[in-house]
Length: 143
Image (cartoon, rainbow, N blue to C red):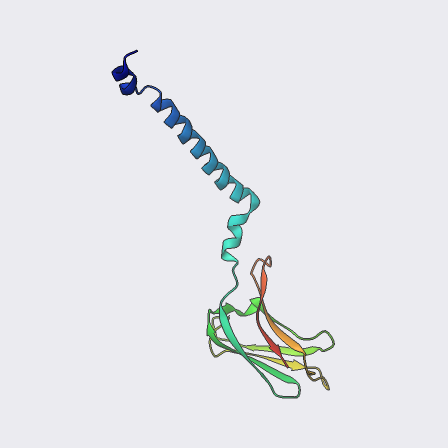
């Protein structure tokens, strides 16, 4: 057996590299097709906005929520959740002309006549994505 010829022989390298490349391409294609089939790519744009809000309760029937800083949020994607034993009579959004809630804009929630927040009651500001598939509580106020 000629050792020089054995060490310089490189015929088997090309098929091995070819098989490795074919397996790698197959795995990558399977991953890409899998993300589209499972719909994982659709949820990338549905992330909750990052914003800070302040709550001001006047002690009677009115809760004012002010956008302090952060992302602009479409006004129709925001809702206010009051405790289940209370009724939000009106929810008025004082937002900019672009229909987005920007810093400085407010939401005023007026409770039904005679209703007030009790100690421990929570009021939540909830964001729901345009598609309705995702939602998140942006801020919570506890009285």
